[in-house]
Length: 91
Image (cartoon, rainbow, N blue to C red):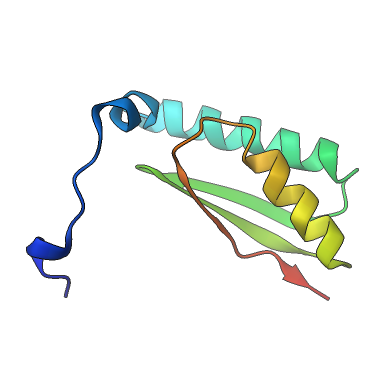
């Protein structure tokens, strides 16, 4: 369990970027998913994007590290300041 002393404060600027409702989180995830699919020309199989608070996770698989990198860059075109974790596996 994390010690509350280890929790980093969230800046006011970041709070403006964080989705405040489930609908906002789903809309952000959809827009990131579309950007990734477009940038990679559909190269990420079983793509899923999860948005929770100030965190974004990419999941799926692709055939090259270049495709994985393209996916990450496409996802980063969304709101800056969100923490992105790229869990896409390279086959």
